[in-house]
Image (tube, rainbow, N blue to C red; front, side, top):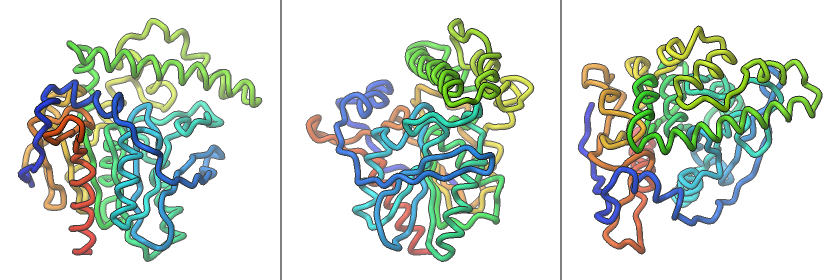
Length: 331
């Protein structure tokens, strides 16, 4: 169902790009108290997870966006605020995003749900009776929604929240080729190409020449200027898709919404520079478990409110705990 939003953008950040860029560029936030744990994956690689909070309080699994990590500003802000609301949290750093490159050519992508499922199963075995929820941002939101749809009633969560999700990947890849959105595309692709180059060197250094060769065979990535090209050359080849279109079609989360059984809040801004309104689902596509909150402004993972430029209000850090608390009370 659609729900009315309480978000009102700060008057001094009325532009979509200001909303998107202000938090990562200007928000200074101390790191929450984190405890790192390394899990060995079924394919003998690893993922690093960062815990915040102690005891047996409800546990929230967090998924970051493309080229992000537990150190992203929106992740640190949310982990700090969840702690004050008496939630524990654990961030899944996608492969290669924790500050240490992983041990195989395999990377993460928008449709890769094996690692979140492995993490969920590991935690659920440890804590069979703890109330769990999950939150994903951008790429992490797409992964979360796809996983929830794939699992249906097999997953035991009291709530889920997904923010600024690229629900139709092909639309979003094309949008990033237009106008000022090219700025984000340029920076993200630069980081991704550096990630691949660094990983190739890393795999050679740790004695994994076969894995390093998989990356070498991708060829010279320097001329890549769009996500269509990158996903065709890199993601599709590394992860068994026919091409970029096949990757986008199979990995886009909008088609999985109808199968979600967990109470889920989906927050999307109409002015998100990473996508167009064509990605937004129709009411008929939403099961009773999924609430869609559409804001007129907010940019991409921005949602900055407040009347005083010296005291910005990060609305997501109010809205998300509110939803979690509502659903926990019903659980």
